[in-house]
Image (cartoon, rainbow, N blue to C red; front, top):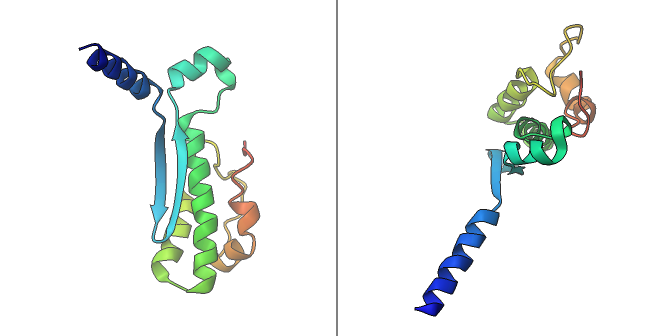
Length: 123
């Protein structure tokens, strides 16, 4: 009985510390990101926290970079459509400025590292 109680407590502790992952993927490109408890994060870091929305959008930017590389190897129309979908998406953190000139697809491929830079926040 004592072993069963210890096992139960150990299992409960593991489930409380379990990390959850989010994922965005398309074809052979897959990006994982940590999903956090935003309430706990706010208590620890205040308004300076990096929330789940930023993490998700950053993963989508990384996904677009991976898809650009795949497209350059194999000009798959589905991959092109997904890249354009991410490029045109209305994102909170990686949004395009209203004055941002829309690029044709070839320009997107050439400038992919700047356009899909997941390390910066654009205001």
